[in-house]
Image (cartoon, rainbow, N blue to C red; front, top):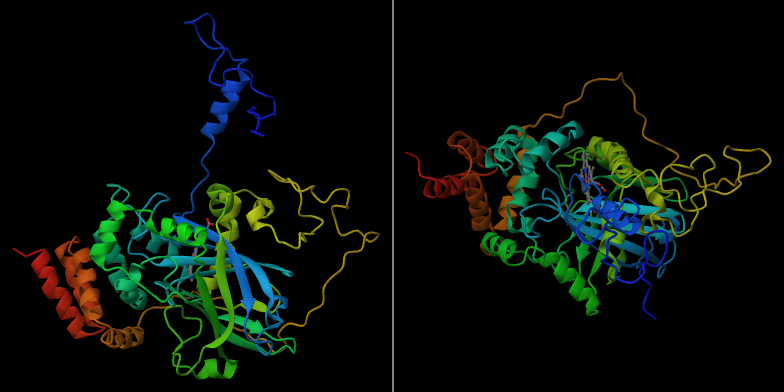
Length: 486
Ligand code: HEM
């Protein structure tokens, strides 16, 4: 049976749905025409703020399955049995562009997954690169502004892009990855996800490790070159959304194998880099990958706005036995996401079905009321911790021997040093193993930086020369061809 067309109070709209109430055939309209006013007023409020970063994205539901026992590393319930399955929702995204921007932009890709576990929702809010541009969280808004539009011209701006990066050189490792062809993935299915940050996981005995998580694409990693990405931006800017939706609709479900790298506190003390430094990777040879699960995306959302646009991920959404580390960027993210969700979606954003824990177990006697409270608001239960209405408190043993921090509050700015160029230099050598990848990196930088002022171009050459003089020379040569000096 076809649904009956109604206005917002459910009253059927009679006869012609396009009719308005008018005085005579040519006179003004009537304020009593609720059908018209209802419809226009709703239309006027259709937009919510887009995400300040990662505004363009695609999402799908799926399942996580435990493939290997890691109970010696992590005591979380959803990991406790090999073969155990947990429903998930993943959203992929670009970072800097607006909600309508091209999927093929040179940008890191967001890779955020919500696990609807029996102990509440766990969000792994990752990127497709294992490192990041900053390690001082106060730089994030400055850095992001350089990726967005110039406040005067409203144009993307190569001057501010490279001015920022060349004066904040801890960015070099991420910039090397961004300007390799990994900066333009061939699809969301064909890229990996990385925690980037160090987290802390503990087992039921109270022993803990520092960990990094890797999600390796079972489809393999495929990339576009700069020219292919540029063409797609014009011919099919939504190609990644189309690719994900159509593959899942056709039953060609993408999957990722999950691995964990671990470090003890002792190993971390002796590592040649800080585990709280988001610009560094943990070499696989020293810290091997241990497999623990598989994620498969197998169901498209029925409604983009309801399920993808309203999805709210936060690194602070965690479950017992998984904790953040002291990485300052991670610590700041723990605040930022739920803060922006309250602004973007409203204070009761966890009641939106895609964000709702499957346990239905959001039970906190004082967390009630607020705009759009639609789940019964805990009914008649007292609105404080009442002695005659006991609440159960779950017992689980967390880490016993925690790190001990001491010292006075002090200003901390993690300035860059020559050490920050060691891992990028190793990456430059690794690229040699892949056909054309060194050439592409130099080319991709040059075609972007040639739009910057000459003095900034010189700084770009200097910045990459600190990785390798060969790389610097290649960029310089191509820059001079693309924007000859007078
Ligand atoms: C200080 C550093 C950072 C801050 C303040 C920050 C802040 C934000 C904010 C405000 C959003 C929008 C969230 C929303 O509206 O729902 C966002 C989205 C996102 N961020 Fe960050 N971010 C930071 C660093 C990072 C890092 C290092 C990663 C990855 C390792 C990351 C991954 C993501 C992802 C994947 C999304 C999109 C989530 C989605 O699909 O809804 N961010 N970030």
